Structures are given as C-alpha cells and as structure tokens.
Length: 243
Image 1 (spheres, rainbow, N blue to C red):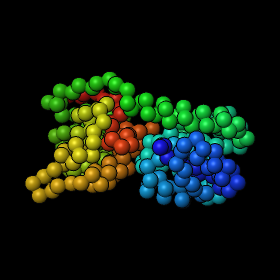
Image 2: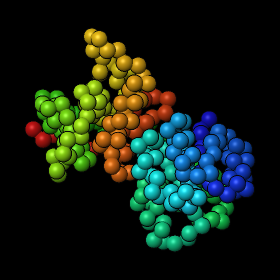
Image 3: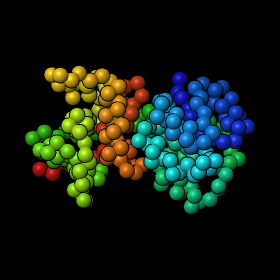
Image 4: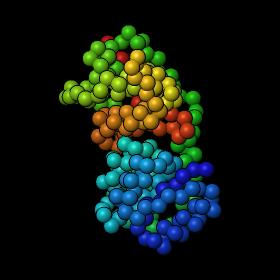
C-alpha cells in the first residue's frame, strides 16, 4: 500500500482528498502547514506528496530543497494559481507535476498513479552500468569530485571540501562504485565496518542524510542518492573518471 502525504491548509478540501484517496487504496498522512509537513517527511516514508502552493506559514516552493534531502518521492503541486510562470517556477523548484484548482478528481487520481508508476519504473528497470577502473583516484559527479587519495569530496568549481567524515566517505564511495545498483543497508554497513565498529541499518540512514546535506544544496543535487523504499539506496548521477 502506497503512502500519500496531503499538505493542504483547507480542512474541507483536505478531508475530501483523504476520503477519495483512501478509496483508491492509499494510506494517508496529513499536514496543514509547512512545519508539520517537514516533521512528517523526516519521520515517515512516503510515496507521493500532494503539496498546496500556499500554506499559512509560507510558500511551499521554499521548502522543496529541504524536503528533497529526506525523500525523493514525487511532488505534485496543487495550486489556485493558473499562471504559466508559476507553473514553470514550481517545476523548476523540483516538483514533478502541477495541478490547478479547481481540478477534476479523476484526473488528479490518474496523475498521482502515473507519477508513482513512473517513479517505481525508474528504479526497477535495468539501468546503464557504469564500470569504473577502481585504480582511478578521482571521479566527478554532479558538482563534486570524489578524491580517493584524500578520502573527501571537493567542489568541482571552487575545490571547497564537502567535510565528509571517513565513514560518510566510505558510504558514498560504495554507492558510487555500485552506481545504478540498489544497495541494501546491510551492504553499506559492510562498507564501514571496522574492528571496533559494527554499524546498524539506522546508522546508515543517518549517514545518508548527512551526506545528502553536505553534497546537496539544491533540489536537483538532492536526487544524487535516492531512497528505494523497502530495498535500500541507489547512486543516480552521471560520473566521469578524471585520472
């Protein structure tokens, strides 16, 4: 059963959406303001977010970067603003779809299912293998360079350190080495296991969150490491061997 998070301050509309989506077989979580929205994202795994554009505590576009640190679930913005510029701004901010109020409920349901289906297909279909020669010491991805000699990542343009700990580096290195492949938390535990340190899956989740924060300062970058619900994590960025 997929979990759907409805972020809407209008109580009547929120209830209407909840009733219909439960009939469609979704498990529903609810938030009426941005603060609660972020709390839920940090605490629960969700499969899709229905996000009202304007909430009592601000424009939700400003929250998307923070949201993408914790989840890569598809986001559908639901807004009363039927404006081309606003639609473009919403999609450029990291949303996957944009629906205007008033909407046709059947169409919204279809969009929700299509976005979830696309999300699932993206990460269960065979992906292009990225075969590295692991004699290579530096690998470029997104706006970063992984330097295996210095056990750190550095900004591609400014050479600023990502300030990864050694264990965070090992987790990221393992993900890059297996780019395009889902790694279980247990696999990543093995990557950082030491004689006097035996990590647990929860420790891996915490390390992934910290890595995302350190290398992801915009929504697009936050998709570098994706969570595959019930499975693990996958590294999903193009790479380039430098030497």
